[in-house]
Length: 411
Image 1 (spheres, rainbow, N blue to C red):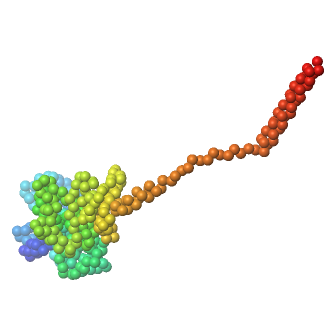
Image 2 (cartoon, helix red, strand yellow; image 1 turned 45 degrees about the horizontal axis):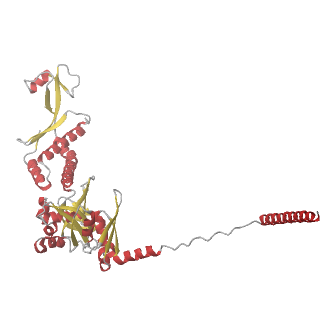
């Protein structure tokens, strides 16, 4: 046995406090490292009956070989005779297992050198697994960190036991991230790597708004007020649709708070980002009217309403058109994301012009003139010949009649 003393246990307790690695994991790593060093030293890599045992009371550790008690020994590495086993334990019988210490002499220095790398790797693996499990539980939640530095347009944020990465696409436009400042971020994803887990965080995710409302509005945390949908353009504007499950509780008023105290706290946390609180409704017309606010709406026409497409035509007063569309289409774009409806906005005058143009498009159609009869020249010649023949016949008839009358007079 190798005398270690109490220093090992003190080191294990210190590592457990600093890095959260349990004492049992560290002791198991030490035993595995000692077994690996023994196999390397004795050139018995295939041995499966070798183990290291640590006696916490005496502070000693040693390598032991487990052998089966048999009458006739065929494999000395895994078997032991009953006579030799009796020298170790008087009560041993056939087919029992005994542990025989095989710790080599002068093995302390060799074991320390060989086991150092194994123990270090085991500690790193345990630390990585602890961090991975911790942040897998935090995935999809809000956490607070400290900005460390900016590298290649990525912001490095320390969130406890590891540094997280905030990519440029998850940052708020025109936001200055100063090292040392505290920041509230949303844990997007956790990726397992060979070293420490890679944690991806966001400062522009819509769920940050949800988490802030849940923290500031007790009615949301209690389930009285429910957040139905969120549409956000980080750093500029957010629309949030809320609904009250209690008829006596106003969902919008609960989110605003007394004298606007709750909403002001959230706006301050989001660096003065505008927030529109919209009352959700199961009626799509009413929901769209609320989502277009603060613009006033004259009418909403549902064009198509099926699983694939949802189109609506919204008519607003002329002086409300720019407000309904918003700067660079921001208001109608957020309303589309919030409701899931494709919204086409037109003013009253535009609708009147379209109706007038439709009326003027009706063209007067005159009755078609009677088509002229086109006669072929051969047909004309035939008609002339028939007419001449008929005249000749008529003359012959008249002459015969006159002849008959003359002959009658002579008689």
